[in-house]
Image 1 (tube, rainbow over the protein chains, first blue to last red):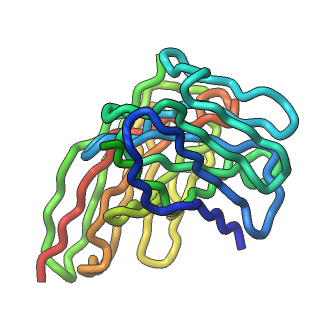
Image 2: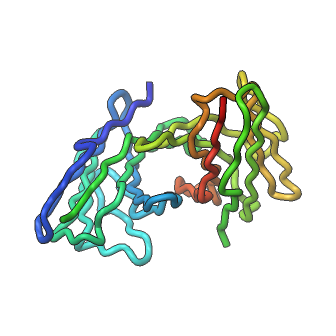
Length: 117
Length: 111
């Protein structure tokens, strides 16, 4: 159990276009999902916390108008990179918070490699 | 503040034990986690330890926690080439459902 998928796994887009990345919890309901960004050989940087039915909470320095997050159901959160630029190229990883009571148990998707040309 | 520190690289021979160390700063962390990331993939939860424990064993994995020194370690017994990956420790500061990750330790296992 506790499987999280992401789609697409890889995407190449032209500068100025928008890209949507989906994150799904396949066998559990997740009221909270997280979006991370990972640069090569670096740790994960939390971008935002996505709560079902409410607005996402963005970390300091993350542009909410550029990285649109929608958590419309208990199993799906989407991240849309709007007007992408080459500096947005990165590995984007989502995670879903498993309802395990007091323990913060996050299960991660396999990641999406975004390349902006 | 919240800061998690790890050594960046560890190289061992197949069959040896590996020990990956981590220090954290937030004493209110309730759980501490170890994740594994293989190249081009997401993170896989390996194990976790509750803050009132000092040791947890799970097959080849042993987690040691020294809460006084805020030091966490992951020992992998009989390390295999398939264990080559980046290992992240993470703390749960204050139980707010966000995790703070270390920069990751790249483990390289040679035959």
